[in-house]
Image 1 (cartoon, rainbow, N blue to C red):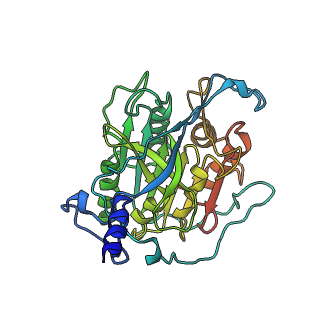
Image 2 (cartoon, rainbow, N blue to C red):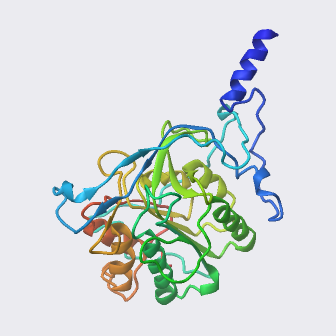
Image 3 (tube, rainbow, N blue to C red):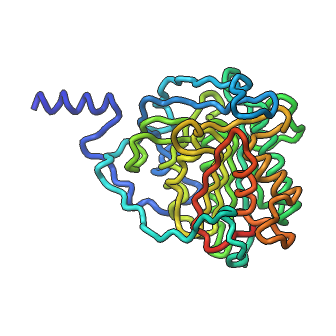
Length: 357
């Protein structure tokens, strides 16, 4: 009995439980629920967490000019105060649905030249750009500008209604004068849950993030030894939204037509979000030398955002497969992939043929 008490005490200290609550039955929750007690908005135990900062490049040069790149890995202290802590047993199991891949790579890229199913419903977007993090040590210069240009292009090029675009932007130096909603974890989660209640099966959602990425070992119900996260905040501290958490937040969305675009370090690890009908555009590879993203002074943006949205879509330089006046998501990715010098983008595409936003 004494031994059991000792073991129980140690498990509590490390955020574990002998009888953890099951999360398998969590589906739709009223927005009035207190977020601190929402099963999908929980604190996760994680260890060896490291924020991998976006590289800053003063001017566009060849990749060999590595001295032009400013990068510093920040070993962050573990923060267990991610709202209300709720532990669970990883052994409780989570069976992610299996499905067949519908994309293929040809010599010209990922665009097939054939447009897929036309959108029948409404267009929505969640746009996140964080240049001003708590404190001053990991601030970025252009992540907020990335978010603003994405919003502008979705409105002007693809006719997204402004009232259906939800911006969560924290501005850095030389920021826009408008005042969007602060990019806190709670605000982002709240909006995702709100849209989950609102969207229908024929609607479309774009989810864009520009900021820092992190990696560590998190209890986020996947089989990965190393997990990736996007770095947001709670107004005072940096907060990590892990890949498995994002998967849970989007797991029971009413529409399959969701496009994710991540311009952040380690974004190549966001493959947990894969599901039929979705496309995940990532600025980096998951591992190795190309797991870091960059922002450049002479571009005034993150490199991936610049080539994907400004050059490929706004200037229509991505309109090549075929040249028809329309730039699909796959064409924009191909252009960014072919023209980025520092970033090495990756894509997971489960939308049949090419998607036009």
